[in-house]
Length: 325
Image (spheres, rainbow, N blue to C red):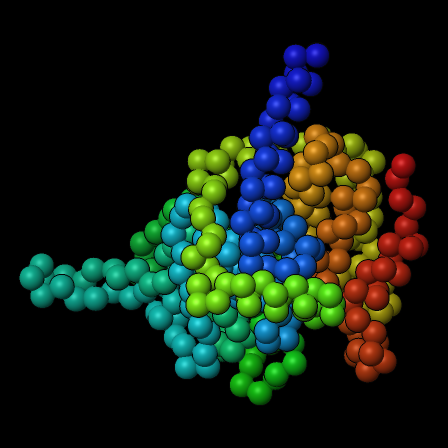
């Protein structure tokens, strides 16, 4: 028994060391936004995709690019526009005159870390091209299935303010994102630090100072550690009650799906490990509750007109539940 506990501590110290190095690289450029960096890291460890929402200029795209640069893997960026077609994203068969046959030319989605800028600018037809790959890590074209290389992670950004020329993301697609991260403005102190940092950089490009610190093999090992994190039965019941409460709430038109329960399970395990524990506590679940649930529930029209937010409803639901001790 003692040997098992010692091995577990050793594994967690390895994970925490990797997380600290990753955060150190990102913090070379990004000031503040601690929650966003934590959730992005947790999503990487829990094998999830992330939707990042915030006004222009709050480092959404920059942080996503820094995370990708910190990992020794492929990276591609896709700028979504209203005229973008599914073939522009996943690829298309191209006729090879020498061979006299069609060959599939892979699109930018065939990478490891895929950054989709302004995901809500593409129409539903293009959005649907992401359904299969986000859930099953594969793309099927003309009856042929292509597996994505490991790791595969989608980081998508969107602007909550500008609605002209945008499309609402389908609920089925939103449900495939582990987290929706709302990025706030920095504080005045943080903004001064941003100015000082970029003033020191001078002509140096920000991304050039960040080095890859994690390999695909290390990510696979860290994910194995996450899967072995312990969670008690009463906490599983708490997750089920929390998600179930969203389906019977008068303020909500649509509640969360069982995929939300699984997301809470995996995300809370990742947060527990990042905090140096080999077991989940209620605070881990509460920390990820809003990022996991806010995009999976829909307000009733009445509450939406009153200016109530999904975060408000999640807070109210948590207050009605008995939190395990």
